[in-house]
Image (cartoon, rainbow, N blue to C red; front, side, top):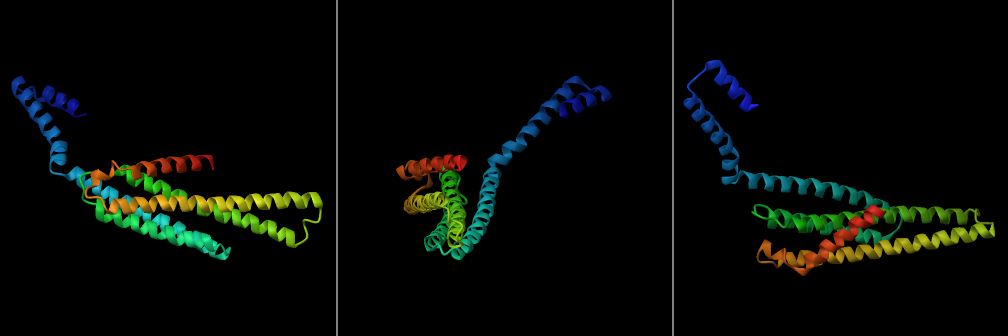
Amino acid sequence: MSVLLLGAFVWWFQGNLVLNAAYAILAVLATLSVPLAYRLFGFVLQDDQIWLQEREAREHGTLHFRLDELQKDLRELGLNEGVRQADTLGEILDDYHAVVENRFAGKQSSPLSYLGAARTVQKQAIQNLSDVVAVARSMSSLESNRRSGHWANTQKSQEQETMYAEQANRLQQLLQDNNELFDALTKTSVELANMRSVSEFERTDTLARLVALAQVANQSGKNG
């Protein structure tokens, strides 16, 4: 558009070709100087930092809200281990939020691989708790059928018993998976707190394990 307008200006005023060429060069240099100056004076870095902080604050609030709702459901279902895990995960989310705000805010280079991997694992842990609630409700429904005498038929009773046992095993597996996720997140946070520099963290084995865990969580989410 700028080139077309410049051509129209030259054609309309029929000015000196040399002066028009000089004007065009100055216009191009002035145009290019804007993004260069924006980067040179650190405005790009500032924008990245604001984006990171806003994204983190938004995700932190969303995850906490979802976790609070799940915690209410877990209490209603009487799942003490699930309630304990919800409390633990809430503390992990708060620790992570503090790390992002205090350790990474204002840094020229933030370990985005850590931030992304940690968030993925946290979201998977919350999804596991959501699945725990769903599984527990299905078990409650099966138990209600048993008490109401709907399992009088022997074959149907065996099928329901099998389903109940499978759901119970799935519930325990979900809780066990979460304990492993919590362990990885906690170890990573401790190691990060002891790092002398942010760049040093990118080379740690703990991050590699966390990233691998995030990949497994991603795959698990797709399969689920």
